[in-house]
Amino acid sequence: QVQLVESGGGLVQAGDSLRLSCAASGLPFSRYAMGWFRQAPEKEREFVVAISGNGTSTYYADSVKGRFTIIRDNAKNMVYLQMNSLKPEDTAVYYCAANPDYGLYSAPRQYNYWGQGAQVTVSS
Image (tube, rainbow, N blue to C red):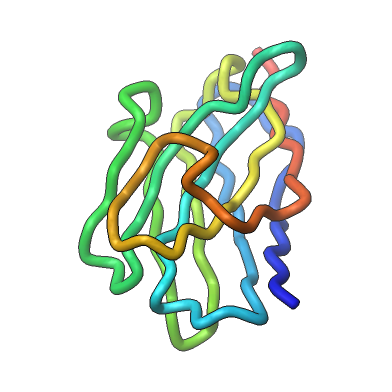
């Protein structure tokens, strides 16, 4: 079965950096676009960034553009989210998700598979 497992969350201070990892199994990884989403308490799930199956195309939310970077390693079935210059408003549970389409989408409904989430807390 398909599994997406996030790791690397934690508690950091504003301005710090953190890298999230997502390990994928049970799917033809390079054929799936991958996305990162986040959900803060009492808020809807929010798109963060997506990357194409071959890693050549990316799509960032305006709120993280210039601070966050997504990369993927298809040889290892891994996708990473490097988060720099973190702000308290970045505090959320971060989810990785897999989308079998070639397009890059911000809508959660476009993604078939989801990880369990990783908590990121940024203190001021």
